[in-house]
Amino acid sequence: MSAETVVHSGGCHCRHVRWQVEASPSVVAWHCNCSSCSMRANTHFIVPSAKFKLIGDSEKFLTTYTFGTHTAKHTFCKVCGITSFYFPRSNPDGVAVTVNCVDSGTLRHVEIRYFDGTSWEKSYNQSSIASFSKLSGENNQ
Image (cartoon, rainbow, N blue to C red; front, side, top):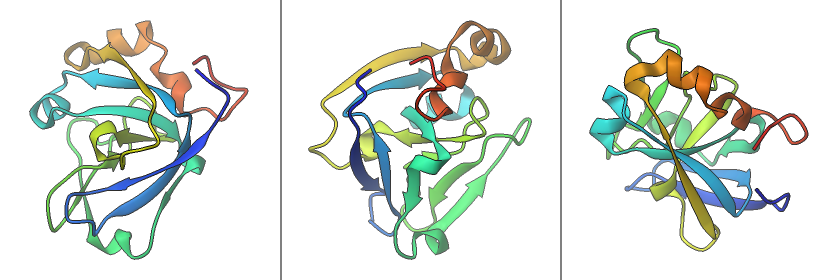
């Protein structure tokens, strides 16, 4: 991936939840088949938490769902129900940004990798997903 970074903006369908994320214009996105991601058809890229910021009063429009280990925090808009980002179990120090919720114009390339969420531990141990929430110089992207 490129060392170049841009500020991507995005959010939910009704625009009550808005955010900005600093990331490369070329990202590695993860397509997961766990019960939650597969039902939402969620494909997301992961960034360090320090590179993500909510805009305006977005926080008051968010609610959170957890299940299983309760490590992942699945956030969604209380108004339109869209999950534009969440805090993944694989990267509790990061944010998973839903690719389709990024405003057009800043993403140049999206490489899709598959994460077998139905065999979570095995897939986690065999993938490099944990490295994607590390700050520059710390990751293996």
